[in-house]
Image (cartoon, rainbow, N blue to C red; front, side, top):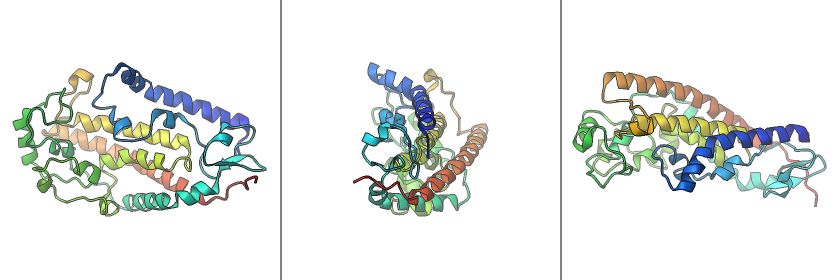
Amino acid sequence: MLAERQWRARLLAHEARVDALVGAHLSRRRAGVPHPVHDFLFTYYSFKPAQLRRWHPGAGVVLGGSPPHAEWAGYVTGRGGVTVGDAVVRKRAATVEWVRSLLTATASRPAHTGCFGLHEWAMVYRTRPGDVRHEAYPLRLGHDGTDEVVEAHQIRCSHFDAFRFFTDAARPLNAVTPTRELQPALEQPGCLHAGMDLYKWAYKLVPLVPSELVADAFELAAEIRELDMRASPYDLADLGFEPVRIETTEGKRHYVEQQRAFAARGAGLRQRLLAAIDRVAVPAVTARG
């Protein structure tokens, strides 16, 4: 049970936090200025800034006083206050269980490093000018040099949503062939994309999980995305991103250090998400009518 002064303080703090996180993106969007690193958080991921800004307490929490949630879809009003209704739990049951199984399986495995972010290189392998996603930014080593790096390494990408963007020429070079069906069997906590996707799994469970957890996952995804693109074949120095030169021994060392740090942070978020899922079954306040 949260009294009005308690939930209002959390709501205002969350809104201020999200405003700071998305302000630059919204300004660029109004000006029509794309960003090859940060736009990913709002294009690949489908949660809109306004949705991220809306504060939810999570399942099993009752809001006293007069919260705006009383007018929001999925909430019910009972004698004790306003809470997420049982109908939301029933409707989202399949999603909740799928996410639970994926996160549990991922958490059960050791974090593997050694991929060195080569998934981004495989996405431009054997392309030529005009064929790459971020055409406004040159490849640091050029097309031929990029191909040489790919061919000098064993690609070990286990993440389907990265693998599906590989070029046709790069797919046979991967050590495994990820599919959506195999995702629970292949996902591992050292994967940068698995860490970023904690944000996706968190927002897919809204309003059943607290918005502070969703915002924490967003912040982690934003930081991981920067490393992902710094280690990519693109030259983003003009945007202030110093490259992680994974084609060198020093670059590999730096990448693995950051990868392990993100894996540790992701492990904590994963456990918090699982704990939030475990609370979904908490009985909601009996609704009026």
